[in-house]
Image (tube, rainbow, N blue to C red; front, side):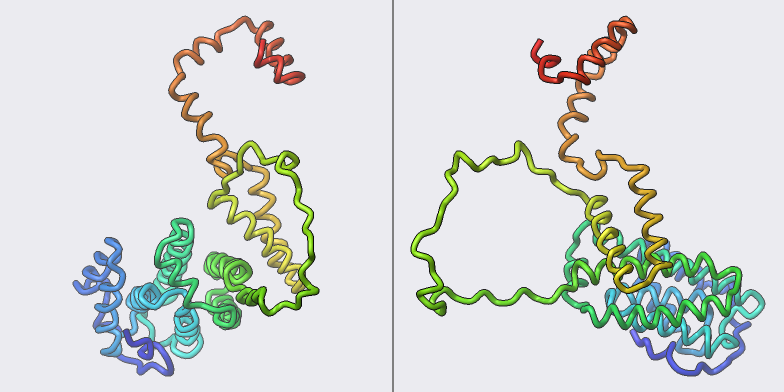
Length: 315
């Protein structure tokens, strides 16, 4: 796809020849609704090339282009959106509802991008692995720099209506910063071969801890997507403070505190609770009957459990 059709200065044409009743728009929207975004983008591209710069076509095209090219293409996508707002606003259709339709189209594409990156990361897909190998820390810095300009353009063009759009872009920015922090790390230095070391650097004797003194945990906590995301947010919070980006740090702190307030360990450590949940469901009837106990006796049993779980289990 040719991203250059949305770069530079647009030639203003009679946008009234394309409106919501055009069957081509309905065809493109249907493709998008069935997740055929590349096909929708190609049809949109064909119309854009004729000089009809409808807001809906622009966002269908840019999203399909982004899906085809990957996260790295956010550099071009955001630059095009900014170019439209700053330099080509009068060329955008539909003329009579330009601001409203463009706002809704922008909201759509930003939501789609955010959902897509979160889904691919959570599922650890092949596409996610490709993204990680294709993008670098410098690329993310470029996206964030363009994003700062984009944010100002949104605020200027949409004024009081810009809040929801800026909020969506901020979430994408937050994801990018966390991604950069955890995934775009420099490669580990090569390990020096043992043969290259001086003999005096190798000790004659190494103290080995007896196996009996090594205590293994009874089980290992297996993390989850929710826990990984929380860890990313915590790391990002520290980084933002180091960079003196206090407004963003405050927003992230609020998000983290909300997560902690609503903390559900089953989401964060599902393997720990897996057997409990399964056995509770299997033995539902017996457990339900056991709940019907004398209230005073039940309270005594609860107190016993609190003070001595071992004797509670073994007696």
